[in-house]
Length: 312
Image 1 (cartoon, rainbow, N blue to C red):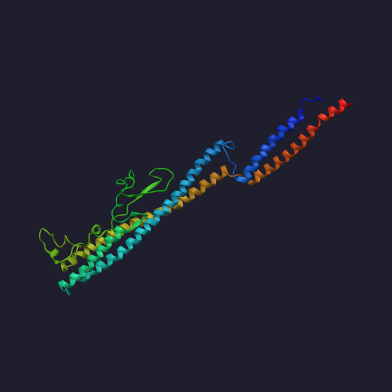
Image 2: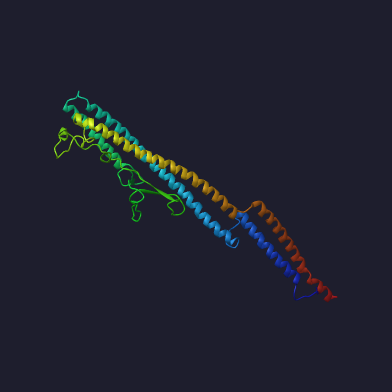
């Protein structure tokens, strides 16, 4: 290589190498400080696209877990109300048994029936008042099935839709919860008072038709025992269905947690920096940068040799 003044090719070469090593050093510093191997699209374009899809799925799964937990809380509120209704039904059967025996007068049965009707009214009040987050649970609004669900309006109608998956596939991402109706009328009890309903005319119907609605006569009280058994069975069917759904939701949460964990591990392998490997690269580029700076200083001093020749 000739000794020239106008161009210092060695300094230019050292500068280019310094820019390359210094840029790589800056990249390593950014990765180590952020903990991310893929900080922008230039780092790994394909990896970035895959990572963002994974991040969206992970966030959706975690929200799905919260949705399922909220549904479990709602079911627990419903089951608690049904447990109170259960106690009321047991008391109603106790009253019906009391009124069924012949040792009470008609006036005494009317007093027993008064408590019976009050208990039935309380069952209806509990069913109508039980709500979760403003959603009434036992008044019949959620007693439908998947075919009756309609979510097109501001307020959905029909069976409650629990969404927990990241998509909108009915086989994977959601299912329906039918709460049932637990009012006294739905259970077939209460809301008739007085011995006049024991008659068999066309207006009031037979005692069997009025079973469960009153215990004001001995015959009605005896018929009501069977109606109360059916009411208890109907209530137990609602509780059993909700218990099965709660177990299913708990299994769903377990499955979603495992999926989210594995997805997070996959996303980490794409996105997160390997600190040991990156620290090795950082040290290498740091040494190269320091070496390039030293060589650039030496290369900048070489044109002085030409001056020494000129000066003789």
